[in-house]
Length: 552
Image (cartoon, rainbow, N blue to C red; front, side):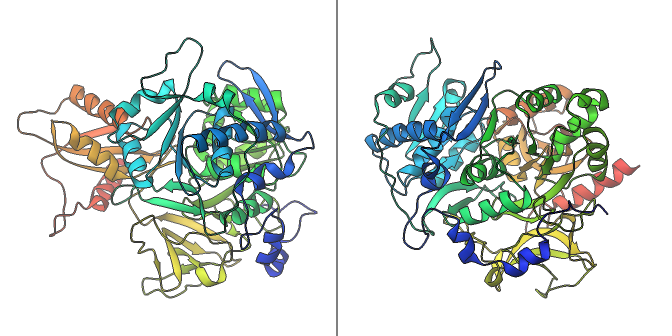
């Protein structure tokens, strides 16, 4: 067991004194009478020459932006959007790399009371199309590196494209930067209420297509609490969350959370490598780092020598997306001289269970930690009863006693996870005697690979689009580097024969249609798939057989 840092507020005291009124008082506005996400995350911090964003471009150029800079940029975006007919409650989708224009687009969308929808830049046309159809987006903002995918999207909304020097504007597109330059920065923020939306997220698509996750403005209260209590963010920190803002952890906590607290965030446009990570930590003086265990395992794999130059530079490291391996915790302590803490959450709820950097409590390697103040987390048995220590069950949120909870159900879809006064996460956990929570496994079929949550249905659907495939089942199989990799079991049409060449063709087909992280790294050609009497594929039997085979 690792003791928490001295001088921090005690966790038990934070839980005892938690009042939602105190969290609301931290805002500039009021969810009951009117507030605006742009104002909360930018506008209220202008006029102070206060740093808001550090960026490192793909070529290594370093730039800084103040909250005043972001206010000007987002004002122009807001005016641009209004001129295009976007209004309060409308959805604007962004498919951009980690560049300043992304932050301006998000803040500008919020400024006019509209809703921002992230599109991960590695998504293929099918994944994009479904998300745009779900949200009913009125506009997509993208760049030329990603623009071509939209040509394959049926009923694609209008597109505003960011051009680099020498690039030609596709026919019918809006020249984003030209319109931006011509737009006025004077854009009055539109006040909204706590239940109004400001983000439209998507699930991973466990048993079907991804479902829309509406995020109301009152979620800002939970995002701020996580940054304060779990990340333990301080005004003098140099904060860098390496998660991509195309996903929940990046959008919630690499952009929204730090800016909400008036603290600068960091963008690196380049690809993740151990060298680039150490370069940026050293160059910018990063003190608080956040990301996924996959990224942190890659640092470990590079060895102690490259880490030596930043040893002792970091104050804290936060990990989310999948369980954190104890060996990573030990390695970070030994070779980077920094505590790394595991955090647990979901797109639907944000982070809920954490080993808090900002609060004092025991930290057990391998434990997800304690419920964040403002949430009451329980473990439920099969009959829906609350379980005690060392009894495995489903992690659930006690709705009535979790004032920070904000998820009320999927967008235009049923939400069976909400029932009987609880939200059931679908993950299997158990309480330890000290009240901390240990993660056991996923109760559903979601695959966690390199920090990404991948729904098998999407991969199966993409495979079936190929003329060689009659049927497919997709599971996650253990992998020491990525936690899990995607494996597909494929039934071929009668005119095709399995071969390594065909397997590679199918893998690349999925990669193009979905994303660079969701394609099957292993494909096995089979003559049948295990099914229930009603015809549903029994993926758990495939997983069980695969695990047994790999043990042997």
